[in-house]
Structure formats: structure tokens, C-alpha cells
Image 1 (cartoon, helix red, strand yellow):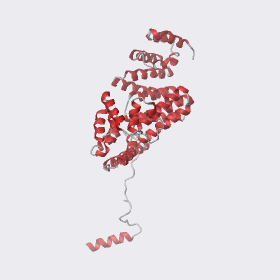
Image 2: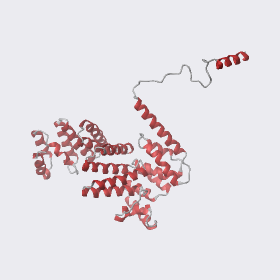
Image 3: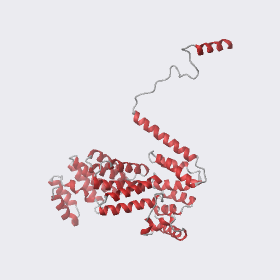
Image 4: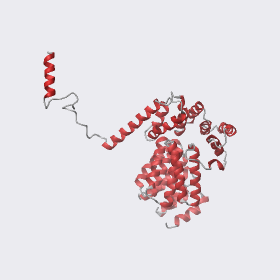
Length: 379
């Protein structure tokens, strides 16, 4: 019997139509087609899974004593985690068994708005700057000041930690001549200061420099919400001055990326505001409804009011004047003293006269004459 099987195998291998061991199966199952997900979505899902797999491998292998190498390696998986739902939380958990990655865990917890575990990880890492940031986020400001005071006393001149302490203390020289590899909080603070000065001068080139500084901060730590927002704000304000269309998708992408890490309602509100300003009211309405729902859920009055300001503007663009009036009346009720509350006035001019009169009645007496004058203008 064994001899027959061997002869049959030899015959099959020699025959032109015979199958070899390494040949593809004759009746291989054809690839599945159709389904509810498009090929593009499936490819995107595969890419995200691969990114998380790489992140998991990097985190599990993180046992090296070289903290700088660990920090550089973190950028690879932090970049992936910023785009994957709950990816930052997963990476923080994977890093738990590795004492050398405590500073990285503290950064991730701060990115996610979780100061208590960030404080524990910062103390484990022995990082006074991270510890002070976590204490400040916990509203334990006296302890944070004491920690920074010790840092000012003990750190050598020019040390990054000392610069951070000087920045918090209001020293204007703390941000002078920062290199691109400076700590992320210093780069973000420098970008914000340059952006504020550029806005006062209406200088688009200075806003480009602010965006460059924020970009350096994002490269240093890709999940930093502060760095992402600073870059988005600099690009947005430059767009207001130059109206360069290629800037819009860039600052909107930063808003989406920031809210993937930390879902703050204001990020949806700012995206909706941009869509209103670019005459895309349907897209604006979707973003603003999501932002208002989150703001109401978190009892964030300022974001709730600002969302209604721009939702009303989107409704006027769609010709829904009564919905616009209802949104603006709610905004006046929620936060009557909010900066930017009356940004809706250029769109309020489109309301019919009876609706404008109702809106004017809801304005506080101290502002009523000014609002009446603006509503009477033709823009």
C-alpha cells in the first residue's frame, strides 16, 4: 500500500496538470465582496488595526533603561493612538508594567484630562514639571507653586524644568530663544504668545511662525491637545486674514484629532463655526448639534451658549429663522456676558422684523441700544 501511494504521488508530481505541495488550492474561496462596509472603510479599519498592533508591540517591548530612547519610541505609537478610538487609554494601560515609561503614562493621562493617575505616574517618574501640571489640574495650586518654587531653587540655569517654572511665574524671558526640541509646554506657550501678538498686528507671517512652533510641539508629542489646538488656532486666524482655502482642511483636521484624544464640546463648536463662515450650513448644523449636546451633558455653559450662537447663524443660512431666534434666545439666557455672544448679529439682520423685535427684547438693557443700532444696519 505504501508503495502504491508513493507511485501515485510521483505520477501526480510529474503530470503537467498535477498539483504540487506548494501550489495554490484548486478550489480556493473567492474573496468576499459587498457587505455593508465599503472597500475604503475596510482598508481604513485594517490600517487602524495595524497601527494598534505596532503600538502594542512597542509598548510591550518597552523595558529599556534609556528614558530618552523610550520617549522617542513613544512618538510612533502616540501618532497612531491619536486617531484610534480609546487608543490613548489602551496605550497607558499597556505601559503600566514598565516603570521606565511612567513619565509617558503621566503625559497620556494629562492629554486625556485625568490628573489623578497623571499625578501618581509623575511621582513615580520623579518629574517635577509633570507633577506640578497634574497638581494644577487637580486645583491643588499651592502644592503646584511649592513644587515649582523648589524647581526654581534647585534646577540649573537654562534647564527645561526651570524655564517652565519661570513661565508659570510670569517671567517674560522664559520663552526667549526656544529651540525646536524644547519641552512641549514651552513650545505651546511660545506659539500662543506669538499668535496673540500677531493678531494684534494683523500679521499673517507671524501667525505662520506660531503655527510652526505649534507644529514642533505636535511632532514632539502627537497626542498633546494643547499643541494640536494651538496649531489649529494659528492656522485659523491666518485663514481669517488671508482666506487661503488650503488652510481650512488643515485646522479642521487638528480639531478632529484633538477631540479624538479629549472630546471637549468646544472642538465641535469651533468646527461648526468654520463651516458657517465657509457657507456650509448643513455640515455646520451637524457639528454644532453634537457640540451643544456634549456641552449640555457636561454643564459647560460657555460652550453651550457659543454653540447656539453659531447654530442660529447656520439656521439663517438655511432660511430657518424661527429656529435661529430660539437658539439665540437660549444663548442669551445661558451666558448673557459671554465674550463673542453677539457674533450672531450679522446673521440676525436677516430675521423678519417681528423676530428681530423679540430678539431685541431679550438683550440686557445695557447692550440694547448698541444691538438695535447694529440690527438696523444693512450688511
